[in-house]
Length: 216
Image 1 (cartoon, one colour):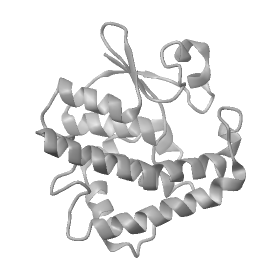
Image 2 (image 1 turned 135 degrees about the horizontal axis):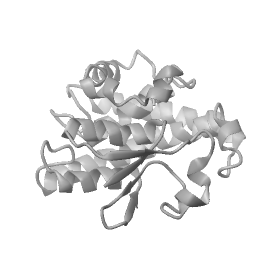
Image 3 (image 1 turned 30 degrees about the vertical axis):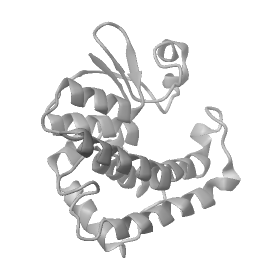
Image 4 (image 1 turned 90 degrees about the vertical axis):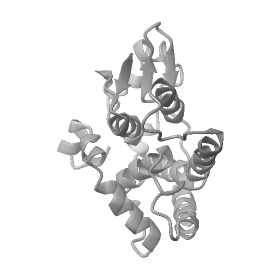
């Protein structure tokens, strides 16, 4: 297998998941900042032009972070980060969907349409006038999630899961591009500190992002 890798919270999510699982995969670097992911050599593999992508041994290519991570979980079930049975897997997927819908998707577009506009304006349909509202939706989602996490160490239960890795990678990145989470959200703050202390948090940082002071 080969992972098409780059800077950014999405590739970091997959890298952090792999580290937590103890999976090592050959990486091929794609220059996201230069738009290499939107050029034909890459889009022939991943027509969406997004990062990352996982090329299987038979040449098929999987994209979308959650799909990649779920495949890797099936490929190597332990330690379980999606779930050990249908109920726990459904629970993790429920929280993944809630986090993406309420928090990370609006935050990501808030960045793309705001601070990241110069990078993304020729790569996708950007709506600059929506940036502030999207960021507000993300903040409101975090307030809701903070309430749901009262008394819990991790998002989907007592142990970390893919839902925690997804949320952590986006919040860590967002803090460096104008969207730090409100430290008065006590459950989120304590959870973030727990995730940030995991060895995989530092190990998953891309060296280019790290050198630039970014968290991706």
